[in-house]
Length: 350
Image (tube, rainbow, N blue to C red; front, side):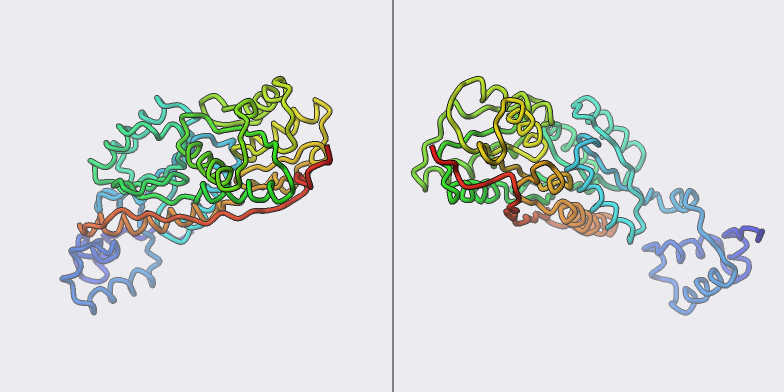
């Protein structure tokens, strides 16, 4: 086995100090004063000798960890895992290593993890936003440290925190337009928990379409899931509550795909066929939506694109941070798309 070449041995080979060699190989800002010819000599020698930098030593020298924290609200949520795939794919081509943390929908865990990350010289945070992130104190702590932070799935325009999000209002508007075109007028709704900001945006899209179409929304056909977060069980329970109210409805629009899956189970147990007796529309287009029975009509938000866009924003913020350049918060919004599958059909004759 070939012995490992140290930076001191490399420095001796090229006749320079270890500090100078380290500045060149780490692309330090101080290296700008070193002649390009000397830099190339160092790089050529490192390649010829098979020198591989020690990540720990590099971190000590540069005072950089080359790591970015990825905070997920719930690792078992298919939305989070798909966004994570986009994040990791994009980070792979950079020098950053992702550090994954599952907050498990816990405010206390979120706050504690943010503090630990700052103490461990993490270089930035990419968060898949949910109810936990409604509290501003931990975010303020991060911003005070100067650390780059990007929120995914929550529009932070108007604040100093960068974000990438879906146009949720437009998404639910498309869903309502689809159901209305199929002849549905008695539509039930499963709203997101009150502690999720997206719940407000999605409901605004629904109300806007209803007002424009002259469609009355029966409050007895509206059930809001309880915090924290959403789940199959929450959708199942909400649909059961709607059914218990004994109001007639031919379609159901849910907060997300996961709650739609739970709702379909409740409808099926109650003897209602989907879509024969009741059409169902979700939101997200998670992988399972294609293979569910029946395949779910939903509003697609390109989750991997959300993840990769967040990485692009983070890299821009990180570059400016370490180069001591000021940069305005970056906000990007992704267009939703209606995906029609087999869970929706023409309104049955009454």
